[in-house]
Image (cartoon, rainbow over all chains, first blue to last red):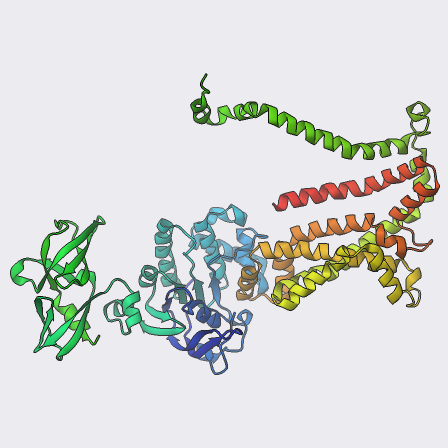
Length: 349
Length: 279
């Protein structure tokens, strides 16, 4: 079952639509064999265009190149590229039953009937939908359609699987379940996969590396941890998770924030501290770096989300353990986890 | 007295007849008007059928029923019936060969040019049939034996029916996610022709069937254009029908109508069924 993935390279791929819109500006991306890459970004950021260029459904402006396993496929249309593809709308063929859909790619390749049947059986078992074999497509639920679409995409054993927002059309609970299933499937197959999504939780869960995109550019490529902990551009910082920004003035290694002061290592002048809500801890007065007033406390079961107001009016978000007892209006002591302070440092405003 | 509204609301399906009862009067009036209109529309049809089987229409029922008139029509006018069917089927074949690919091409070209072609296609429906026929005769009337051939009528029918096929197929193409289906098929390695025969055509089948029934129905019943396009040797059924009513006994004309109904009514029912299923 395990197929060897192949490496994929995108070199300087830009895409200008006939109306002059620049959907993509010279993107570069190197994907190792067997790797799962998520293209993550808000709608209109060019992630789907990039996926379509890799698929061969769209072509880059002159100068752009796409290579599969070192072979230039830039001018090959999708039919020739041998990729598996899962669409947001699933695009299952309504004129065929589940079996007909799954074996379509094999029929196109003139695979013998016996082998087709065997492969369909194998795919149905892999996706755990054996009982749906002769079901009509319009009799399937959303989750079942998604499984059939996946089975169809991998039935011909492509070396590259492209998924375009495959879970967007499903409800939240099913999305979580299928996310785990897709993750296991990709690991089992060892296939190279490119996964387009606007949902960062999905990208974080599935991807070996994430390419964060904005306005037709790849802003940062890195492991989910790198993207979350060391965002490199203002966009990534804003887009991934919640980021607190604490602005003040540094003088002799001490940053003044309103009436409080925080010891940091940064050159003199105005500076901003960036840190995640979970890196802000509520502590007793002696160890606190600064104090703040609780503006709101939302209970989520596994954590409490606090909005804090500083003496100079700046707002911060903190993620406190669920058993923390705080009341709105209460004054609390705050400390930023030292390692995080180090990691993010002080950025010029 | 208070109405037990809450009972109606609570009992669910048990209370279904109740709204009907409460709407009794307005429902009755509507039913009556609908029935009246239906009778008004259907009566001439029934009278015509009855006339086709009456020995002598002016004497009425008392003259007795007969199939003689129908047999007379079938023996003396079978040429026009056969020609009508021949033209209708040829027209269908041409529509399938031209109309379906045209619909696909229009679906693919989402340009202003495409929209223009789509609008132009409807012209022969909007322009009076006589005008179109005259234009055909002026333009192509001198081309060899075309004017004497049944193909000349076919050309007229094709012009008239093509928009119905194109629109019907185009409507289905636009209502399904054909673009995504084709992209999915392409990603699975399917060539243009494989896609065409295994994905595009099967998924547009309902539009093609509805369009086909429409085309055959329209071609069989077409009178306006055919009146000018036909020659004494290329008479279609509706032309023969007009002749029969104009120059023969009303019983013959009515029997002719009966034959026409036998051909057209199953098509109309099938058309109704397919369009009903499409929704």
